[in-house]
Amino acid sequence: MEEEKKFVGGWGKGNKMGERRPEDICWKERWVDVGSAVRLLDLSAMSQMQRSFSIDLPSLRLPSRRETHLWYILPDEVKSTSLLKRYSQLLSQTEKDRVDQMRGDELKKNALLARTLVRTTIARYQTNEAVDPRSLMFKKNMYGKPELDWQNCNVQPLHFNISHTDSLIACGVTVHVPVGIDVEDKERKIKHDVLTFAKRFYSADEVNCLATILDPEAQRKEFIKLWTLKEAYVKALGKGFSAAPFNTFTIQSNPGGYNLCKTSEITANPLEETKKCNGGWKFALLELADSHYAAVCTEDDQADEGAPMRVIVRKTIPFVEDQLILKEYFCN
Image (cartoon, rainbow, N blue to C red; front, side, top):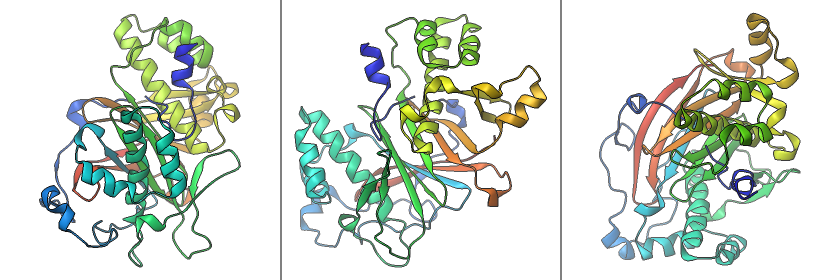
């Protein structure tokens, strides 16, 4: 039961787990607009800086219809007390109260960083005018998924989703289409037998696939990858775990990526199966910080005419530095 509690959680709690080979992480460089080096703020001089929050965040163009922008932060790299205090100033009173309710300094810090990442990431994308991250307002849909509340402002329909582990926090951003993301520590252990645990949550097709993997470590990793992809889909769907139980759909790998299939749609004919399993959603599976798997799921935009999803990954310490990590296309 303890394992079940860890894996099944609420929106934005980082219900984990995805992979890409280390050699697929194409290149790294400091980023401004064209990848040149920059320090946005010197920590030692931060107390002397009086500029507004919005000016301190470099503005970015909105993601295209085919893009997902994925930002992440490593909590262990944020050590400055003054910086954490500055982050706290971004939060609403409700958010501050929720942070204070967390038990333990580490949980409080991670909760603060999660809300900071959401606010500072979204504030970068409003190109018509500078947006103070403190001014952003949020609401929940009828199923409890957090959304932006623009209060009838004339802005692009921007979507976001957040996920975290103890050592990494990530936020995905799209325009026009819903997005779900999930991250998981690659070394996360599963206390129970993998197949026994999979039978409780996965579709029969996925369990059978796992059963063909004889090496226990490889089987564990594949289980985690599947969980990450499935969790990302449920979060993109926006209806909560109870509305889309994991055993009611199957994630199938193919040479170009991954397909989503409803359990009742899986057939013995591979060609027919592909036709029924392609519709509606795009997936990407990658690696972050050499330590985490990450999955991205977006609803297919009919205007894209089946074009591959492009994922742009940036690592950040808000108000300190941004680092472009990855640009890659993922085909389904």
